[in-house]
Length: 315
Ligand SMILES: C[S@@+](CC[C@H](N)C(=O)[O-])C[C@H]1O[C@@H](n2cnc3c(N)ncnc32)[C@H](O)[C@@H]1O
Image (cartoon, rainbow, N blue to C red; front, side, top):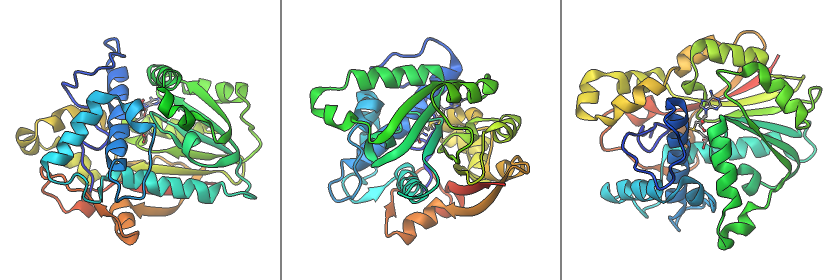
């Protein structure tokens, strides 16, 4: 079930132990949202009954966020009961899609993760033939580099990169999109080879013109694919509903940062990409025998507010 607090939304009042932003609103939204989802994965991974491991997530999220998410799960009596959040369900689904797309012998040997946040796939997925590029705003790239460099000794084995290489591109995709191509190329990206893009929890932070420009400009040699997750219009409308915000004030904080929904996103794609598959993540979890944690403050049918992921192929 999509839970906007344990989901991607930034929250007010996170008195972080990691003071990393310096007053810039975009940096703050980015920092909070990327740490929040890492904390959700970290807390879900604490449940020994689940087949899900994210060894670096708690360190990357920071203690304050992990404590907060653990507390939420305990308060709703959902801690340690084999329940996962929509964020973890999304991560598991994308993991599998990445492994499928990049399996040994496949044409795709480079992956670009746009809006990488605190993602840990290059450390978790065994993809020794794949060049991996992470793109995020400079504040996040900096924070992540810092956290990985300062990792405590017991976590150090988990920071071994399992892809062929890992390159970080510090870039605001909304403000400096024209720099994406040259920055990728400078780090060894092959313009003539197919690529897998991952946009997990990103496109709804971009406006319609920003998404349109992004998909128009992404280098996409034949055979390229993209995995894109997006929230439905029903969820966007829900968090923007004044009556709901009155009851759940945290939605007031989340609402302005979610600019795009799935229905709108489909219209922005232009003719360079076509959607070949679309999976509701609630359905995906059910089909795979996973039970999703519930947000007690959401009075909507979980499936109708669940995020989906799209598989896109370059035309
Ligand atoms: C909800 S987080 C998701 C992070 C990661 N993909 C995950 O699922 O754990 C959204 C990420 O998108 C990034 N982001 C948002 N707007 C961006 C922009 N204009 N350029 C680059 N990254 C952006 C944020 O910094 C943040 O790391």
